[in-house]
Image (cartoon, rainbow, N blue to C red; front, side, top):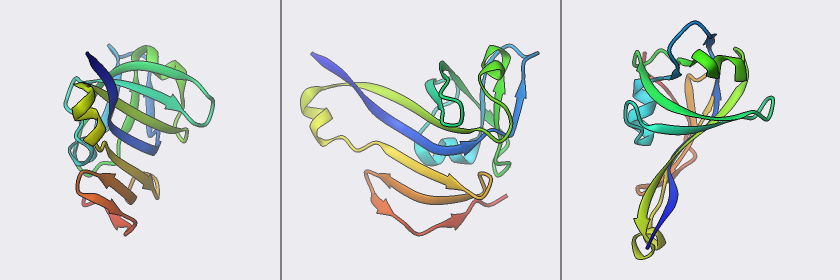
Length: 133
């Protein structure tokens, strides 16, 4: 038996743009994708903290250091610039592996320019740092 567990999470990402005339997805600053272990084209679940909307789509890379979180296509109707998001990805694993699993989590601030907190297999850090651009 396998179960679905949280693999990666970006918390309090601020939407920087919403473009309905696009084929779809969420564009994410590639340095932040790497930091939390998200892969290009990986399926994601998005919760809009500001308006309560939820949707599934996939992640695409935006330029590293840009701070970009762009809702594209139909997803653009679920949020607007300034909204705060929680972005999650999941993985399937057996119960034994899941007991030991630690997801990678980053908490953003300062308009996506600062990582306020990280959690993951490496442990937890509450030391804020600026994202290089």
